[in-house]
Length: 426
Image (cartoon, rainbow, N blue to C red; front, side, top):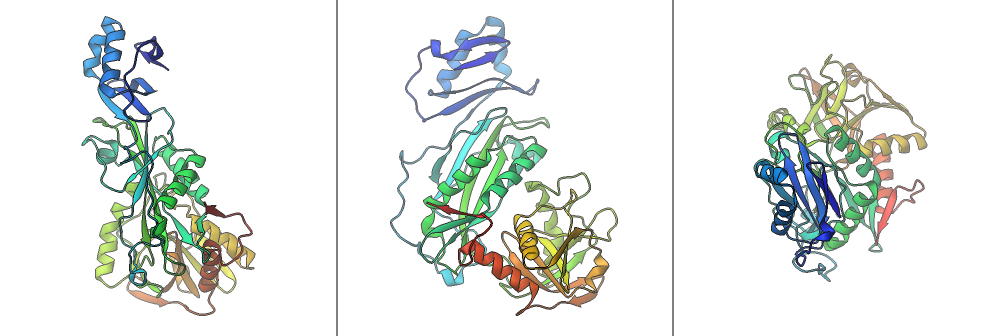
């Protein structure tokens, strides 16, 4: 194993190493002035030994400069035992009938780290719990972080299904590029999801009672004081059993069109799932909920004439056999449920348009509905715009119901998957 310091090459294999304390660790030396990692390697050793080894075997001029470098390790959190012990219980002790959309701590989380410029290695399952971060972590100081959301479903025969997880992996890679972050490969991402699901299988609700929500996180956890990409990244997945996202359950939503605040702006980050997109909507959302609304519908920041998104989901309008949704033009997140609904609707004979959708079109629409991993396909009963309330068709026989039944059936295995969207976890 080799690394470079001050343009000189050193071979760690020439030096004796002490016994390992972890299966694998990555040690990094970060130069805050040049914003580069001046030394990094994956070795079976302890960090103090690596630092001592480095200082003993570099040139005097290089050694004298090491004091100004930031030293840190990039390593998975250790397991309590070499192999996690899964519970034999079929189900956790949960009142599945009262399940909502709130955090419920499960057994295990998946975690791995890497230095900037390196690749994520295979991670480990660790007991769910707190993680340790430097106060100077990039994610804490500059919001360098992304998240995803997907679900695992239990079939009647006990088998477990994931819905299009590779699409979440692709979206994370696109977001990571935009945010100057290292990211796991698509294969690594999907494999990590499977491991997390299997480790928390007893927390997957019975069929028809909900799903296991999976939250992959990509965080800039390395310390950085000046504005720059973090020198270390953490990929983590945790899980929680959930049911309905909105407090209304399956009842129609009541939205308010927001004109004073924007969700995203042109050439910004509205099209990637960065954590910094979400906290800014809280003020408008909280105000709307205090007034009795379910959530907020945002307009484009440039003209305030076109629909964009609800706080955490995409929006569709329908009239007759025509369905329209705002095009993903850089300010709108390309939702995986949105993408799937567009394809399903086309298969069912509807005309689907991705285009600019004017706020004035809400007046003539027959139906309005939202889509997202957390919300599914949710009907909108009314929208209030400039103190004018517009109401829409909901319930039996609607387009929304047909689309929701179809996609839910595919996700839970009650409708045949003819598109290759489902991955069975075993």
